[in-house]
Image (spheres, one colour):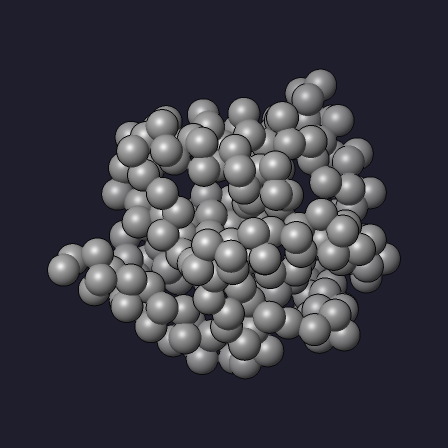
Length: 198
């Protein structure tokens, strides 16, 4: 099973991806984490990624797709994956279709977490104040979030009609509590698993 979690930055995609991973035995693929690992390694590529992420800009499609394709070729992806933070552009969405088609698979469902901008800014403020100084990511500030939200509206939002037109987009109210959001997400996944098993 291949699941995509969509939503603006700070909407809870990572949290829900981890919960899906634990419940259904899927593998969470977070491009953010993969790219941050490169930053931690402090390679030339990592430094370039860091400056881009710190500015709240999107990493180039070519780089992201290379990272994703390499990761999907790993054996632990065979039982199914949940994409967290990918695809971020229509070009990436189309490229993912090509990658999965080559593997004899498709994207089964795209789950959109709907959260309004004011709530996202509040979440980031709480995260920054509750975390220790060394625990706050350099891209986890209100200023950067606003920039990332603008980038999301410009580049990622067009993915929503792309998947809606294919009939695989499902929407969940991301303003509710984590457990309530998870419950709604689980119901969607269970219904698809039921159809696939018939």
